[in-house]
Amino acid sequence: MATRYWIVSLPVQTPGSTANSLWARLQDSISRHSFDTPLYRFNVPDLRVGTLDSLLALSDDLVKSNVFIEGVSHKIRRQIEELERAGGVESGALTVDGVPVDTYLTRFVWDEGKYPTMSPLKEIVGSIQSQVSKIEDDMKVRGAEYNNVRSQLSAINRKQTGSLAVRDLSNLVKPEDMVTSEHLVTLLAVVPKYSQKDWLSSYESLDTFVVPRSSKKLYEDNEYALYTVTLFAKVVDNFKVRAREKGFQVRDFEYSSEAQESRKEELEKLMQDQEAMRASLLQWCYASYSEVFSSWMHFCAVRVFVESILRYGLPPSFLSAVLAPSQKGEKKVRSILEELCGNVHSIYWKSEDDVGVAGLGGETEAHPYVSFTINFI
Image (tube, rainbow, N blue to C red; front, side):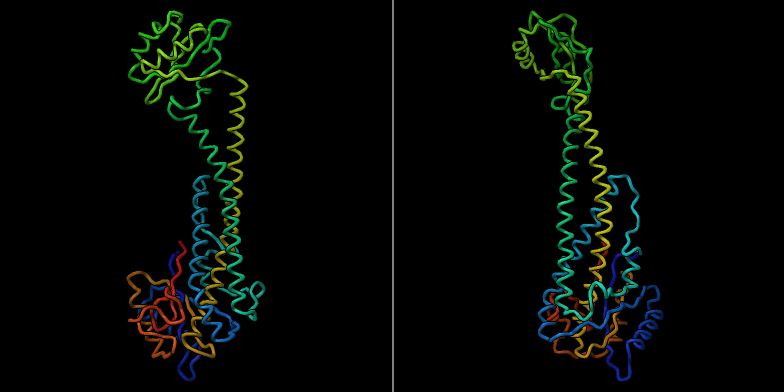
């Protein structure tokens, strides 16, 4: 599937010529000189023209609005890709109204029920902008809720998988590792990995009330090792000071099976919440992408209509088409389009040496026919 398309319109200007006859000439030229270029007719309905001033005013907003709508489309697509990766789901082809996006474009049919053709163009464009803006706002809210749960889960995971100097120790310690009585207490010491011999040879001498041979290694990571040490409760503060002076960190820790079970349940709930929210957001994104892309193509139809009238004049008489030329074939396709365009004269047209096209905004491509590019990705 191509991801980059041209939407163009050519004037029907030869006496006796029609859009159908011009379409036949375009098909013939493409098949003979650029046969590998996909070519489709882009069906633009007879929309309500209004006044020339209204068309000029509307054209100023069309380019900016197109950038906005296209941007929202890409945001949703990127969100879909991220959610699919997070769920280990193989990326599938996106659809619009049940058909692949490229098929929807190349077989575009105007939705009269949603956008009545007799409505003023400004009203149609406003409706599209409002709808897409609402979807973008909804996406921000839904995305923030999902990311909040992800952040909470990431914070818990960091505590469980980070360095021994900062991570949660509850899942590394068993009840039998701890001694707690009226006089005795077990501490947890974080010892630099390459200072373990120093710890084992010196911990008993850090205070006279340390239980001999009471230290046991519970865990080791790339930087530190976790050791227990049992001593009399009355010397805990003094032992911590002496340990710190030798480069050993005594972690504050109190074993509680209830707290450990509570943390486990919290983690499981967050994981379930994250997956439920991911699946829900993904389904919303699928539906919203379809909605935005459909709106975008209707917007493109309005844009072709407005720019064609400003370029070729009234009454509306033009052929619109969709092409997907390869990069190496672009120059040839451009020459075919220019040849079919003929010698177009319009008060709104400037030469290619001028900047932009009068009345059509700065992004419009400088050709003697209406042309703009849309990118799916």
